[in-house]
Length: 360
Image 1 (spheres, helix red, strand yellow):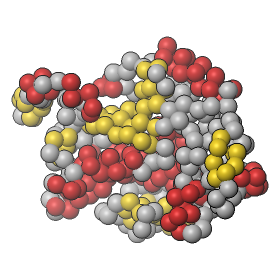
Image 2 (image 1 turned 90 degrees about the vertical axis):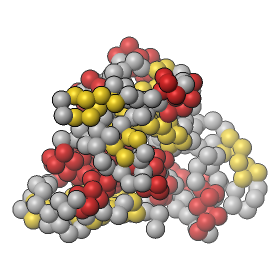
Image 3 (image 1 turned 180 degrees about the vertical axis):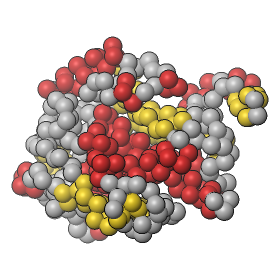
């Protein structure tokens, strides 16, 4: 149950970090959409490990293979299955602490729930699983782009206490990809890279914030009460490994304002209803209002660090863990395409719901 997301545009991911492959099955993608591996691979290339000196050196090409759901490069409307093979898995690297619960990992909780766990790399709890989400998200983004003109751009806005100054309304994907940390503020990006490298060299890790802007979303997407658009976005973001916080619009910052200052006045722009400010982040009452959707996701420091840490093993003995292996000193740069993917999956779900309600 926990590996399925969505109802109308539904995905099921599978595979472990150090197994033979990870993959995803997508149900609900409309028939007749042009789709090949070339539509998916660029997103996977942005997420894959080993792409810069501040990412894990695990060397995975993350080449995707579409196994079903298309013919002659066109979707059939049936289940789309995508395979991403693991080429550089190293289960032996976990042998020394296979029976130890790693601090701030899911080792103990998976053991408590299932009575058994994948000891190498955390299995399904590993960020390796997000490759499958990104593949599905690329399809969702193509659907939203061709049908609605929706554009989704995420970027690293903060690493530790270093914050960029970025105008999301004018941001381009090219500006995000201009440096390895994926912060469009060049001066802040240099500081972020230096701080990440210092943490890596010290055997430590850093957290931060990914922000995202979505342009071109029409008014009317989302459902009342429990299926609000922002509630589903929150679920999508908080399902990403290491994500610990979510905000939409003004978020926690809005509490410092009064209602008079926080409200978004309505105005007319030709025949279109607009708001003169966007502290709501493009969503009101759980339904999109046609303005840019703005959100942010906070990510904790990577849990695996090269420092001795106190823990316990499966027999209840107190032990000292000294983790080794290949890990990101900061997940933020590689989390950017994952945030975009989860945003796209939620929006594709609500777009298809709305299309069905309107008989489109």
